[in-house]
Image (cartoon, rainbow, N blue to C red):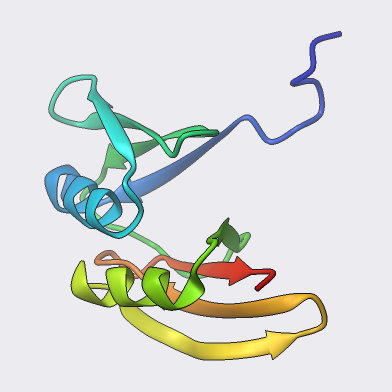
Length: 116
């Protein structure tokens, strides 16, 4: 068996505009991208790969919550806002750290947490 066996290996988002999604996640989190034609783009966050698939209608509600880690959560929150994201759950503390939720330009809700 490989080290990847039974682990999350890829995440894919259906998006309305690949270029806008690339601009948002590139600005907010420094992700890099590899285009596979006009309707698909792979992203790399430095550890995990995933994709943006262009679709006519985005259904961004429901499903699993993707949670990103940040060494500096305040700076991450500011980058999300500057990139055009909307804070949906303000920064809060929990045992072990702090977290906030945001919506990207297509309405996907993600979260960012830090142990600091």
